[in-house]
Image (cartoon, rainbow, N blue to C red; front, top):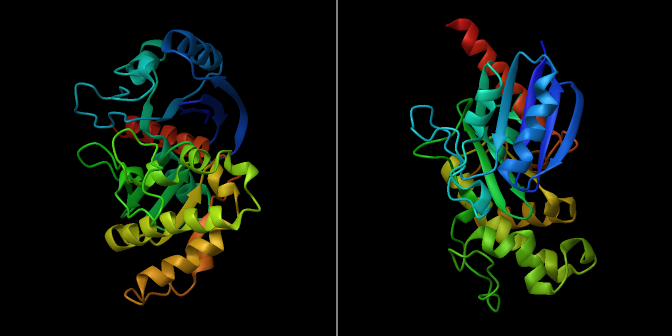
Length: 294
């Protein structure tokens, strides 16, 4: 089968063709500007690809509840041109094929569970740390939505003493995204994370914030594996720091085989940056299966 995949990001839209094995046959990247400019390019890409279904993992907040009147719409995004735009309806008007929709981070979580390091697990958390921070969560093999979908990047954490005024979040003075996303690192240190590789104090602080959040996630979600992706996590020196600090902050409270093997519990993304687009392929396959079962 030929499965279309659209990883709809706030900076770029990745369009791809894959199959049920997760093999990506081709892909392109289209800048995310406005719906009027971007959507025709996406539709033109898929027009002659003879795809059987399309999976979409979109930046958000996005309405992922099928019974909602705004299902498939981007909601209160800072990207004002996309606010209240129904990306799903725009694609359905162009193509009469099954379509699956979820958040971008849920897509990455699904990609890792289907084809990557979390294959065979049913309770997994994928956290991306980049321009923003978001989390995709699966519990019992199902991606979590709830009343909307998790916005775990905005959980409140305790600022480290002396770092109380470095949040870049317009909503919260001490949320994870505000204190630990890439723009916060740049605000605090005056340059991008990639230029701070050898500054140990940068990563000590960053790992403390991420470890605080991960302890909270472990205590609430109880995932079997935590996968960390996104541009900030290209700083691989963060992983041993985060693992050590999670153990310290947990203080012996949770004792499981997973917690005793942190190198295999808190891990980097495993699909060479394609976890999101591969999750979209799986969303397309699931939508096709659902259509065929009706």
